[in-house]
Length: 114
Length: 115
Image (cartoon, rainbow over all chains, first blue to last red; front, side, top):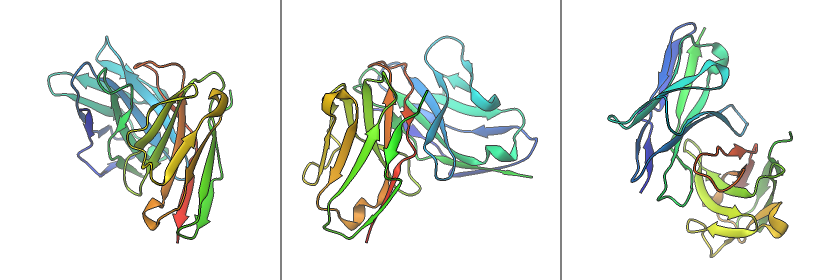
């Protein structure tokens, strides 16, 4: 069975500082990993995905994520946080045994402090 | 390109009443998902369609929930009768093709409040 864990419910970071939002996963086959962001009263917006290849994936709005197979992690990062990055972030995973379904973590609320 | 469109955005109903949600996916996307998102939680899959076929409805509470996707485009999700615990945001998403690699695009959701 697939599962995703986001160990931090809340992350606070000062504007201009680097940010990291953590995600670990558990799958039976090869993982296909996604990050989404949700702003208040909005649907989820796709940020980036890891399929195969380079472990560092770049996505929208300056975000990137690093796939680490040995640690089964896919942490979201940004070198310099903006106040406008404050939102709810979700990690999601698919694998070949999951009938192509997308399983989400419980989310991490990021607050960037001016 | 237009995104996934859902309506209504908000719905307040009394318990035991029926309610329906509508979703129009992105043109050309043959995979459609319905998710439920409870407050403070991640989205949970209710049902997934490939064209007009429901290929995974294992998480859909079939005693009160039903869904359809006529002609493989628009979809409706119905609850009858609604219970207090059904209060949540119902999200529709679509993706191009039945691929593990493809990201899903989400609508803004319908916030249901059952009183």
